[in-house]
Amino acid sequence: MILGRKWILQYFGPIQRVPPCNKETCGGENEIHIREINLVMNGLGMVGVLEEGNGRKSVLGADDFLALFEEEEPSLEEIKETFGVFDVNKDGFIDGSELQTVLCSLGLECCLEECKRMIVAFDGNGDGLIDFQDFLKFMERCLC
Image 1 (cartoon, rainbow, N blue to C red):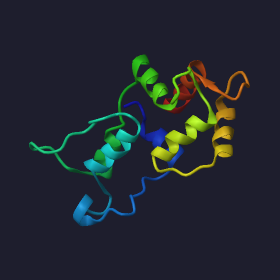
Image 2 (image 1 turned 180 degrees about the vertical axis):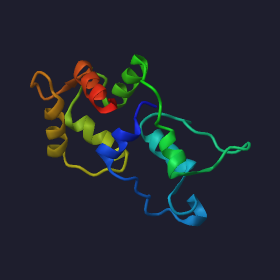
Image 3 (image 1 turned 90 degrees about the vertical axis):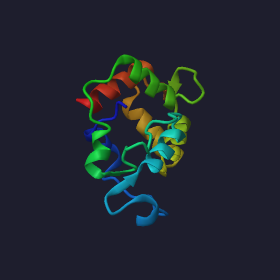
């Protein structure tokens, strides 16, 4: 993964629990079940990110969860893979609709106009699209 703790907190705010989850199905307060993490990751096309069983934890506390995202610098390949998650139609660009699709798959609600405004903030040439170079600059800014 290439998302850092700073990026998660900056762009998504404090971690919120998924409403239908309860202590019996997902663990206690400030814990998240590995099934929940995999549900989000599967929605992003990242299948089988975490495994449970065989002596592994099935519930992670907040510190354990945030530790999943604490790595050194991501490789260029990891950034390309992440770009590919957002570039839904694989045309080499991320538009407002694609951004909205990914954010919705993460359970975040935002309208198309909000997504277009997010794109404009990082669109280097003003074409209303994020190309890989724009995305790289965005990631550098977020991860520093």
